[in-house]
Amino acid sequence: MTNQLLKFPGPLFALAMALWVSLPTASTANPGLANPAATYCITQGGLYGIRDGADGQSGVCQLPDGTKIDAWTYFREHDADQNNNKTTGLANPAAVYCGSIGGDYDLKTSRCTFSDGASADAWELYRKAHGGNHQLVNPAAAYCLEIGGSYKIKDTGSGQVGICTKPDGTSQDAWALFRADHPE
Image (cartoon, rainbow, N blue to C red; front, side, top):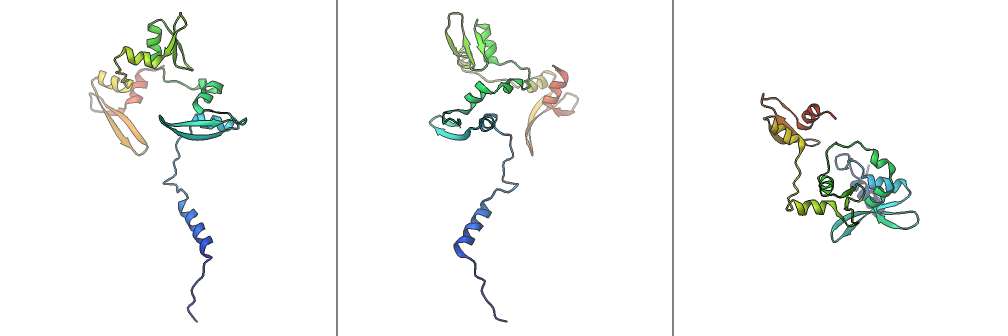
């Protein structure tokens, strides 16, 4: 029996191997939640893409008629089901501030409109009024400290979790504790 070299179909084999090696595996694929604006764009027959701009990246939806629109704008203006999502029950500080200075807050546009017709971005008004300090407090962390506990962020395999160690030494997910003591 003679030793023979195996011959592979050179370029075709190399191309197939390169494609196979570049396929994502279970460990490299990102199984995160879908972007609701992208999903809505696609379900309406549009094409979704990411545009790089001077101010960063933004999602763009190209509608079946060729019109291009910011994907989140399209989603907010057209998806009737988006307002059926359960909320946390926490107030939007910009909306609260808008009301406190006599304005009407528009949830879709985040604008504060006054009786004279003037309007402004509610978050800009809020930041100006609060000296640019727009640090928002995590209610679960604040409650943990309020009851005499200590609060710590813990890294888990699936992300970060806030842990409250209560005065009696027991530890618990801070949001679970907050929700248990603050039912809606």
